[in-house]
Every structure is written in structure tokens, then in C-alpha cells.
Length: 93
Image 1 (cartoon, rainbow, N blue to C red):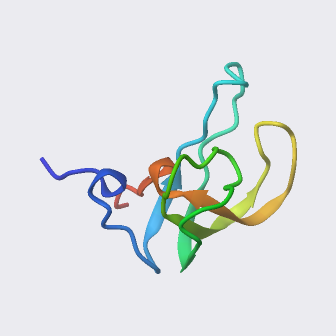
Image 2: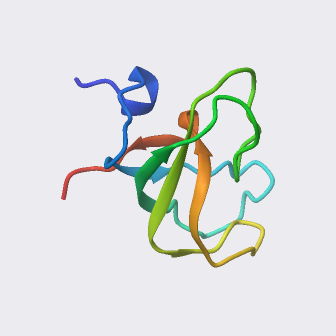
């Protein structure tokens, strides 16, 4: 069984990914996890759009396939800086 891309660290520019949203504060949200493409590496430290960054963690710039509305109603977002732990390779279609 292949390892998750997020867990293995095998993410990179041009890869299609699913952003796994942190639903802790929004347990009843029906917003789907957005799909996008990594377009650039981000910073190793700093803040990401939907998850706090703990320690030194890779951040990626993801451009969404469709404008995305956040769990908090913000948006539409065309892109976002997302922590690596919130990303996983999109399933092949």
C-alpha cells in the first residue's frame, strides 16, 4: 500500500492535491475539501490559511480548481498557502 504523499513528504510543484480542512471549529460544515495544484513552495515557518503551523513545517502555495469558500465563509479564494500536513495527493481520476 503506497504511503500518503503528505506523510512521505513527496509533494512538489505541479502535483494535484486535496486540502484536508481542519473542521474542529466547524463540525457541521458541508464545505468539501478543495482540490488544487501546488504552484510554488512556501516558507518553512509562518502561518498557513487553515491550520496553525507548529515548528518548522513545509508550506505550499496551492491554486484551487474552482474558487474556494472557507469554513468560516471567507472567500472566494483562488489560492492559499497551506501546511504540508493538510495536503494529500489527489486520487487519480
